[in-house]
Image 1: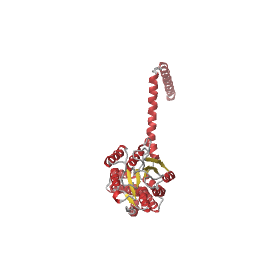
Image 2: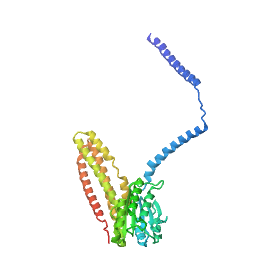
Image 3: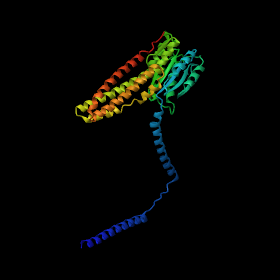
Length: 389
């Protein structure tokens, strides 16, 4: 008796579902019949304005991506402009420049500007080669074509050199923008009011909106005529000028500023950043011992966020001398060892206490590598040339 009574209920259920589906389709059909399309005819000028606004917004978005994301990846690590004196025979300066640019970093954008000529003339300072990577031969050729003569227009050259960094669409260096001045004169022959010109230099640098480092090399400048060059150093925020009396001293001074100084700076940055990372790893391990897993996790995340890719890339591009290759090898080894320390710390904080002993040995090994790196940095820093007579 129970089975026959079940069938009608199933049938009724099926019928209800079918009715519900039919009702749904009826509502959709009715909605379609009730749909109205409203067309608004806008004035042609307003339509053009709206299209222009939309297109402009899209272009602005693309432009932002290019400026903020794409271009920084293609920017040089260093931008270096050589500002050379052409008032006397520039042959030795040109030959020295040819030597030192051969060891410049692979991601250096180099440029060449000369100064010297008639006071007040438009061409008393000229950019001979614009900024570019891989343009060593162009710089060598341009420097070799320079002929001596005219008055010293050093201050005008410095001002123009600053302006070269602010041309439209100019890429800023990822690390350092700099001007390396090589002069045979300690003073400017055209601008008697050196105080005014020095103030102009400061204002031009400030208005450029970026940091520009100056380095000055005086070649065969008599001691009694060095005061003017030292005032330029003060105005530009440069270190004390290096003076060279012989071609060998000139090469050493120019090589120091062009090639050695960047190696020292990036090696120091790598060591400092990685030491900070290791300090965070030690803090994370201590937090585990204190039962603070949240602190340990935070410190390890901060340690993992440390980046020295730009510094290591620059060191690799400068590994063209035994000392530079040694520094780069040590820096890369430190980064690899720091990565192993971080992986070991993660295992320990994750509960693998058996990994603690090997982690402690790795930390001792890392500290020894840091000590050797610091010794190599100190040895390279000790090669700073002394000013000659």
